[in-house]
Image (cartoon, rainbow, N blue to C red; front, side, top):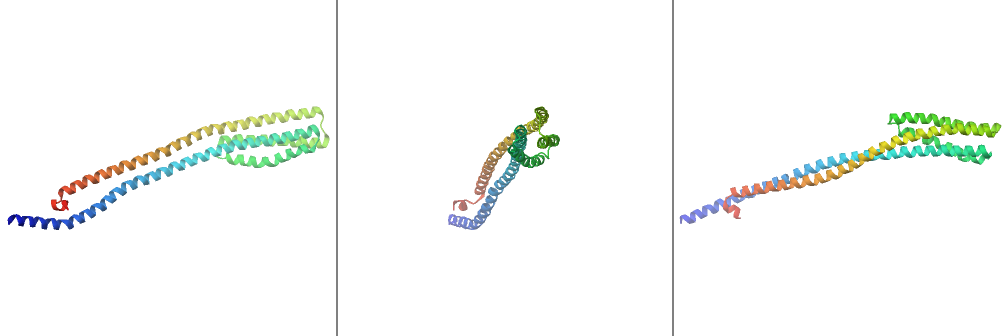
Length: 246
């Protein structure tokens, strides 16, 4: 009889414990969900911020590389235009055929936009600004020499000696222009090497950040699951046997 009473009492206790255990379990599941979500969310958020920052640096450095190539190409375009103008002028002086002035005049037309663009491209570099200012003076001198030669030839004609003298003077100016353009180009190539290295570094950083995010997420998730499993075991040990069995 006493044994039946004890069993009945234990059953009643177990029955009373069930609602409590259900409530505890509900709270526990909610807490577990939070514990699983928040740390991983923090890691992902930090990863997004780091990745965005790294990609921003990478894009900036890539823009600088493109900018450097544009400066180099621009100086080449300027030199080509000057060569075309000089070739047309010499052809006219030698032959007297005005058709040679067509490439000369077309070269003059495309030269000014090239010079303007070059000045804009190097506006952030004081040393290149100084070189470009010097180059601009030389180009103005060269264009003045070409224009003067054409005007004199049309008005008075040229003897062979005069043609030789003009050619020597124009060659000296052109050589100086090539030297200054070479200095500008070499400076840009040095900048290009530095900027290429920065792009490589940033690309490596992007890959590293991605790997670290993946590892951090794995470590955090594993740690949270381990902690939750340990807490679950402790809770089960503290519950009445009847509620655990159910």
